[in-house]
Image (cartoon, rainbow, N blue to C red; front, side):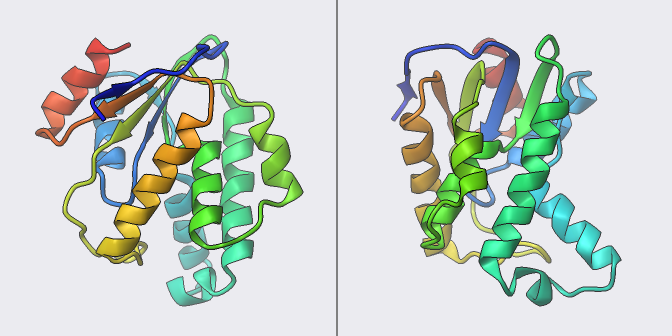
Length: 183
C-alpha cells in the first residue's frame, strides 16, 4: 500500500495524521508542533482527560460507547470549525476517524456524523502504519482491534476524495521528514 491517491485536494491547508491505535500519531503531531507547525490534540484522549479530571473512571467514561463516540465527534467538529482555512494545520485524527470507530463498534452513523461527513476538506491524509501496541490509561484495544481499526480507517479515507499517503514505520524524526517531503 505504498501510496494511494484519490481525487481532489482540500480547500484548506489541513493535513490529517491518522492511523490505528498506537501508530505514533500523537508523537508525530507533537514533534510537528515543536517545529512550529499548528497542530490539534487527539479529541478522544482530550475528552477522557477532561472526564478523569471531573472524577470519572475510564470505565465510566467508555461505558456507553455511542455517547462516548458522539462526545468525541462533537469536540472534533468544533475543533475543525475553529481552524482557519488559511493556516497550515496538522490534525491528530479528523472527523472521518469517527466513522471508522462507529463501524468498529457496530454503531450506525447518527445525523451528527452523517452531516459532518458532508462538509469535509483536507489537503492530504497521512495514515501511519501501526507500531507495537502499548497499553496506557486511555487505550483499551487489543492487537486484533488495533489491526481492525487501522483497516477501517483506510477504508473510510479511501472512500473520500483526498490524497492519501501511507507513512511507514520509521524512527519518529524520519517519519517527520517523510511527511514534510510529501506536503
